[in-house]
Image (cartoon, rainbow, N blue to C red; front, side, top):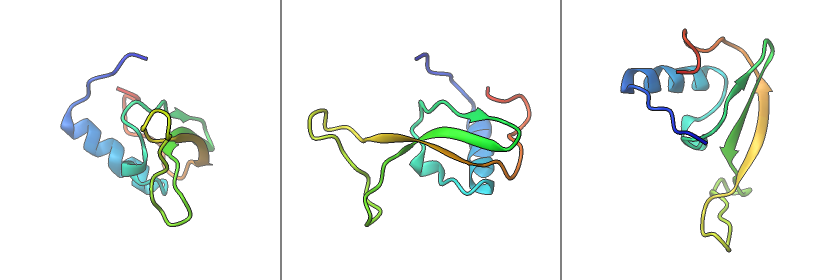
Length: 82
């Protein structure tokens, strides 16, 4: 997947938008694909154990991600996604 370069202002706007929708930006991998529909947001997030710690794959030593869908409570910043 190609990495899209965005400005720090744009990154900050997306972080605010994620928080408005109950998503912690720190839980979202930088290369997550975010799909916004009229009523939902679907994106990859880091998997977490019951104690809140990130889950790591023992074979790759990388974080495990999972696909999550949440209600869309506010629309994304203008010119979504870039």
